[in-house]
Length: 126
Image (cartoon, rainbow, N blue to C red):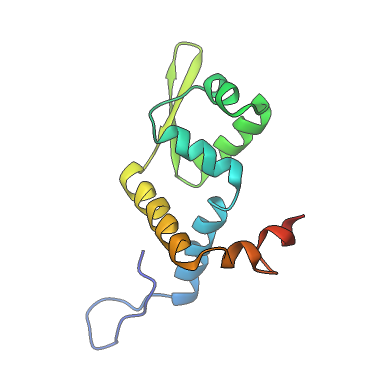
């Protein structure tokens, strides 16, 4: 995903920066829910069935299924049939794990600033 425009002197077409940034924002929104993040962390350990995730996370099956559908629609997870169940896994594991690791490094640098942010912090979502 290119998020910068190219010069007209090059042979590459100009990138619509607003569209590229909008798509990038969609990726971050898909990662913006704590339940989806914990599901991704579990899937980073290997394939899981919905029933496994509900037991591990203590969440309702409908909640887990809804979040998995969101993550699937965003291209972040995939499923394959196994008998009557589906096995869920990360679709682009190396890239997704790189993004999550980068987020952890950013949080280590910024500390509690994002949690205290009046627009996006924890108090804003109560």
